[in-house]
Length: 291
Image (cartoon, rainbow, N blue to C red; front, side, top):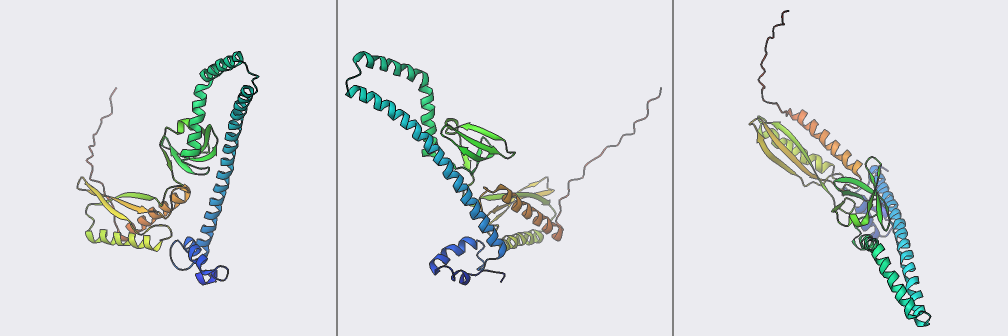
């Protein structure tokens, strides 16, 4: 058996469960699941579960750190209240503790402010989880570790970058993992003399390719003519939509590469080219110097 159909899944699940699970695997809506589609779905689920496990582990670590901090504060407050209730602390002792508290506030005031901002960022704003691919300051990075005071990112070259959470709270952050299916654009130029018929055939071939590979691309796309340059070439932009976000950047790059190669085949088949304008060249005969 080369394909799995919904009737095969009903041997192991009830109809309601099949109606939920089958579309999740059959993203191309072909009505059947081949080996490659099933493999891709299993790998996707595995990566998702692994990312979730890392996120839960890091969240537990952050919660434990916060719990220790709050416990220390409560112990100090409890001791002070106990001294007051038992009347062990005299007025002089209270004055002394108050003065020490003022000194501590002066020394650690900025640190307390930083810790508070970091707690708000991690537990309330929470713009990412461990494993998310984000863009910070124009650089793509994957979240490696989250702590109360800082977050560790892994850059594309595996360099670890530490950001204080109080600093991250002031920066715009793009999160690929939490984004819906994302769009892409391929730009190219064709000769001004290209007939309209060939351009129409090219648009039809692109449409057929996208519909044929519906597990990779959404069928809706835009073929845009940006401009005519020097009455010599037509600049075109093809806007397409992936069936995924860019969390898996390697898969995104692979899909785009295959699309560009397919466009190259279309250009060769339709003999669509782009010629530069003739360039004027001046030749000079320089006589050899005589001594």
